[in-house]
Length: 422
Image 1 (cartoon, one colour):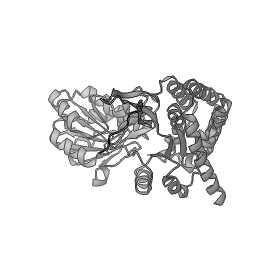
Image 2 (image 1 turned 180 degrees about the horizontal axis):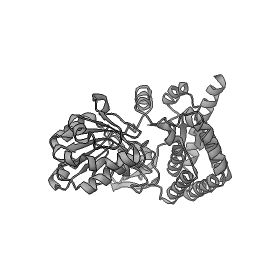
Image 3 (image 1 turned 45 degrees about the vertical axis):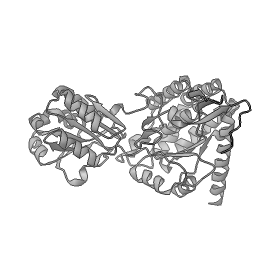
Image 4 (image 1 turned 30 degrees about the horizontal axis):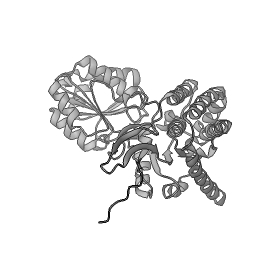
């Protein structure tokens, strides 16, 4: 216990020192670090995957987190592609957001600057380790990684690789610190005033609530994704079928996956055809309200259950989905307002007035018309990797990438001006 306490204290202090040095680091060096890390990760693919298999051996395959934890060569290649993409992006640090000269001759500039030290608390997604490091380094922030025990073997191998590459380029390896994985150390990180400038939790609602309730440092919430798609009476059935199937089945363990299908009552005769592929090909278990159940009973090829109250407002993270029947847009909006986590919400419709009302009135970080919520992702939005999807409204909202990891400061240049008395 005492050794880990010392390890944590030394790591936080090292991250703070590294953050000061990173402020002077040239972008060409950062680009080289990220590109070389991508090369090294693929060269050491077998080592990383062996560590990942060790982590996976401790988790049941039916656990929704299993797919998030899983790495293979294809996923590692995608991670390395993201590293190279972030390396190629222009850094926002130093951008002039505003510039003006006052009547007294003072020259004011508002400049983007690093946050300093960013702590990211996450569960079982080793890709987050790479994404956080890349985005923080590109914005000259040091990062403290608080992963869970689920992915600790993978994270240890990856962070050691990061330290090696940083040292090769003359960058302080304290720029990335892997905190002890046990939950008992999380409060100490959340109360590290003076060492950490910002905490970002990524994971379950329980984790996010714990971070918000226990932090003495600023927090950006990346909330759970309780995602709805409303299919209006005016919807094109072919579009709706493709969008629903993609949103639900593309990758079920991610936060932008569909949880609740809201369907207009007039389209109930079309419902079996709309979701047939989900049942026949993917075996999606459906929890349908009374009207939807009647429309599907005997016509849906997958598991069909009666919905209960708890099946709405739930992030399933698995091949399960609820269905709510509504009389029209107003009921759909009311249902979303009640159960949404303000992450991603979609409408499928051809009536432009209905689409416009939905996009205007739904309160979420990302709202969609006639497309899948699977696109809520920093890479898909052209941001490179992302550090999370913010569901709050202060500082950042939606996919957070490079600009969201910066603050700003005012630079004032004068020539002897003093403020008059009074």
